[in-house]
Image 1 (spheres, rainbow, N blue to C red):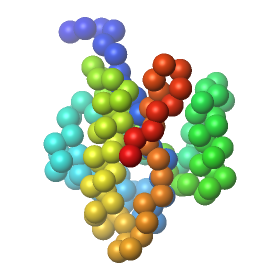
Image 2 (tube, helix red, strand yellow):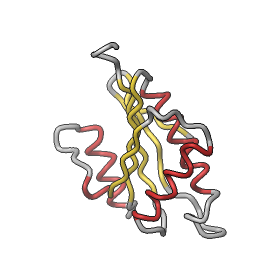
Image 3 (cartoon, one colour):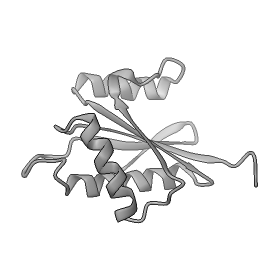
Image 4 (cartoon, rainbow, N blue to C red):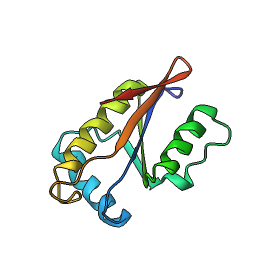
Length: 125
């Protein structure tokens, strides 16, 4: 087993009218339903509680998200993968979540998925 295995990391800031407990339950169903690898670890929280003081890039994203009243932060950590691959898993998860009862009919998805590459953030669609 490799001890210093890289860990791909990505984050999504998004809005959803569902409560955190409902979102967490849905994520446990969505991950296996769309074949997200077991190694992908998800952490749901609120944007306001994101610790960004020591990370100027994340601090700017957080400021924007707070300004636009974005509520949730979903972080993916994927051992042995790149940040971009971790972001791709978040895209798949949130696309599926958007098609679930978490989002009301006609509710527009508001959010962004991003990861760090070469000292700057890249954004996924």
